[in-house]
Length: 259
Length: 135
Image (cartoon, rainbow over all chains, first blue to last red):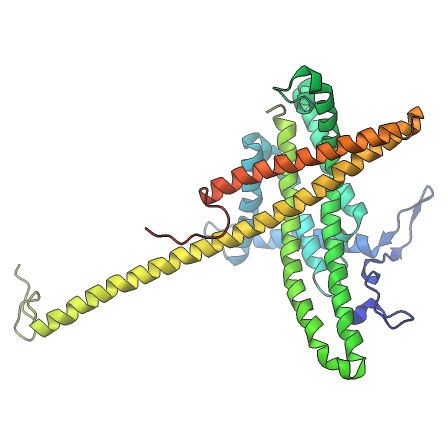
């Protein structure tokens, strides 16, 4: 997120929010709904193309002894598969394509956002909320389809005296309903905050450079930007990991309720 | 035991006292070098584990903070909605706000338990910063 990209506004102060602006690339209107193809949609398509392209090229050789690219693909597979297996057991592997696609989409989206000037798809709540709702509804449907009413045991913990049971059940229901919110807000807020921080510090560099003798101080925020960029790369991976991990944990609740 | 004598006319096992001293020196030197390599490898493994656990710890920390707030928010939202439907403002909002808080605490406690189990399994009970091996 190079500072000049921020487009200085009237005060000469770079605008840290500018990077999240949406533009219509192909305006579309469907039954009164604005479903335009925006820069966000373009980046989502790019994320999908990049991930699919990478895995197609990486696994093209199908070598028994993997080459470099194939190793990366296999390590990624193992990473997600292990996570899923550890959290849900063997039955969970049925949902591997879903979980793997989620992880790759979020990870590539986060990493693409780290390229200066690029748009970060996961920095919009509507995107992460859609992903989280997808997980929430999947868990709900899988849980009800697999276990029927036994799924509701998730809300009634065993070993609780009857007189506090209604209260505990209510608390459990709230805790369950809060899942999609925390699931989506965590990813969105981390990406948003990180990118704003980067932008603000980059803005300091530009402002100090234009402030006469204070320009000698400008390397300081620049150092900060370098350090924060490294941190943000870590956060980009961690958030994809956390999102996928929680998906696995929620899936486990759907497959084995009442444990 | 019938190795051919080398070009100095000696059996391979024979050494002059000086050669033997050098050889012993090399031998003990090798032991020391091996120990150093082993210690370095252990230290590297410990550093890797530390870094991994730090990453996992960060991941858990991020989870807990948002888990707590989200439950309070959702609790408040449910109470507000019920108040709106039943016209009992503000009592259900207050009640569900508190229930949401309880749900948040419950989430955090569950996450912490899970974290403790996972970390204990990963590090063999040696949580926190690295402790040098003294065996």
